[in-house]
Amino acid sequence: MSTESGTESLTSAVLESFAETPNQRLKEILGSLTKHLHAFIAEVEPSIEEWEAGIDFLTATGQKCDSVRQEFILLSDVLGVSMLVETINDAETPDATDSTVLGPFHMVESPKRGLGENISPESEGDICVVRGRILSVTGQPIPRASIDVWQANMEGFYDVQQPGIQSIGNGRGLFTADDNGEFYFRSVVPSYYPIPTDGPVGDLLAATNRHPNRPAHIHFIVAAPGYKELTTHIFVGGSEYIESDAVFAVKESLIKPFTTNTDPDAAAAFGVNSPFVEGLIDIVLHPEIHAHTPTHETTKEIVR
Image (cartoon, rainbow, N blue to C red):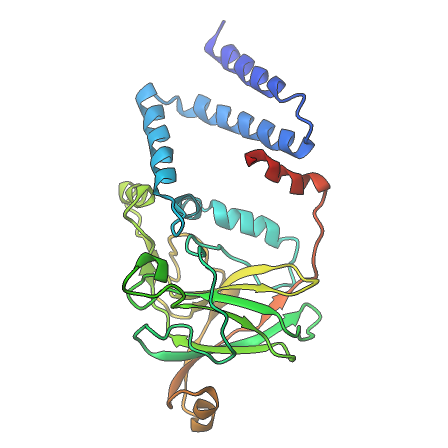
């Protein structure tokens, strides 16, 4: 038996082992995964030592995960897989604000804050006001939408990365838009920063001569009854690494200017000193979309 016919026979045998899978979506996913994974192995022909090194890398990635760090999300991010999934799903809602990656640090609940409150009271840096509206694709405001925001400090660290230095919740806030769909909050102007490099993903970047930096941004998750939940960013226009985000998450529509506002009346209204930096973003939600088939939802049973 030739090596080629032997690999094809093995692939067929594995595919046949899934024949009685009751969940058809699960069967489809496992079948496609098997075919592509076997084709990958047949193409690169790894040595036993290389295969073991790959297993060790994935094992170390899992071991680096904990309650405040998700190394597998980080791996998915730097390989562009997270953005590929986002892009595929974004195609269903072309009129909504573009989505982008969740990132590895949405690991704790954001503290509930009132409109205008400072999400980064422990962080140094230039004070900014971020404001905007939550709108439907029809242009109508969505009242009382939930807006979850989080960002790193000026040194490039999220609260969960610096226990004892930052309190959990610094750089985070959970807001409710007003009856006109409007929101605003205070923070510090974000800066670019490196993703964590003290784990397997950092080793991968070093081995491939890739930088670990992300351009300045603030994360958003926006939700409202009857609308599809949106995970997105606002990127600071002109930030370093805006053209080479380590996780490929920049979309042109999400780059916004953070400009200086010299109006003393506006500063007083927002509770900041004049002049101040202002970032504006309107976030558009699409009406809720039901799954294409009920089997999509039930694939969650895979890991149970």
